[in-house]
Amino acid sequence: MKKLIYVTGIIIMISVILFFSGSNIFSSNTPLWGKDGKPYDFEKVKEDFRSGKLNIANISKEYYMHPEFIFEDYHNKSNQTKIGQYGYGAIPSEVSYNVFGFNQGQYLNVSTLVIASDNIKNKQNLALSLESPDDELFNTNVEPSEIVLSPTYPEINASSNWVYKIKMTIVAKYDIPDGQYRFRLKAISASPVQPSKFFDFVLNSYSDSERKKHEQ
Image (cartoon, rainbow, N blue to C red; front, side, top):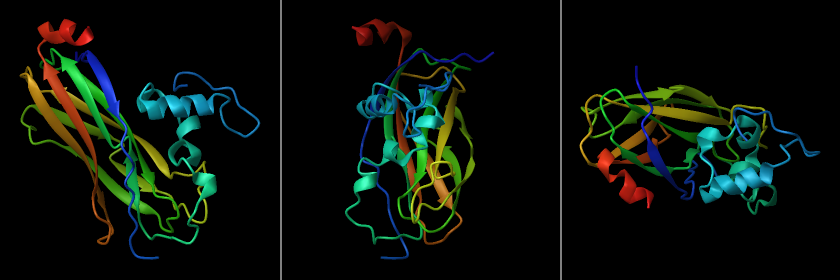
């Protein structure tokens, strides 16, 4: 039976790079609702996510479905005329985890949000895969592996599929030596004018004897 690996996680928040082409709290609990149609603690959960206190894996769709969760100034847009045919990104777009005693059969789950850019006119079909230069050491899985992002123009409908939570699972084929291992979530679009986008994940593997040093 596979076992979940012990980890200490560090989420590195970097800006979501969204590009245009073609034209100028929690999942186990039911949140209480405010008058604006959002969970009452929406702002706190949003800030805790952005500061790295909360992992997106532990945040339910009732929060991240709202564009204000992703786009800081969604209701104060300075450029209402910039409309794109295609565009998408990931948030967080880079994470790093320390793992200790990552042995054969153990696994690690990592999550990110794949989102459509704002003001996009078209649906976007994406095929997702997780790649690593060290794939001889790991088995990987992505859920879901195919998504269809809804248009976000003229506005984002919070109930549409403009955002997906993606879960990536990394399973050790063998006992993993100490070292740094890189993974990349690759998004391939059916449209030839859309470039691939990436989510980068760094796994720092240490022997179990190193755990106390990193917990101090």
